[in-house]
Image 1 (cartoon, rainbow, N blue to C red):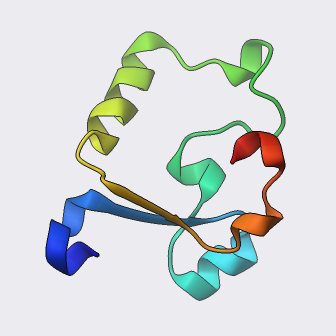
Image 2: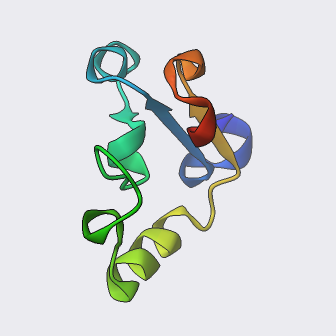
Length: 77
């Protein structure tokens, strides 16, 4: 995909560290800055400046590839 769309338009992630190492990518939590437990509560919130920084980083992304997506809970898909 990167060949056709450009290198900054595709992101690959995996739900576990083991899969991420095999696929040579970040975990879903690391790439999308998700907390390790819940999005609810004080630890689940990003400040506006930090959130905007990550939005800008991902604004050109057209394709998100998640290796082993079946391992993610249904509420994260």
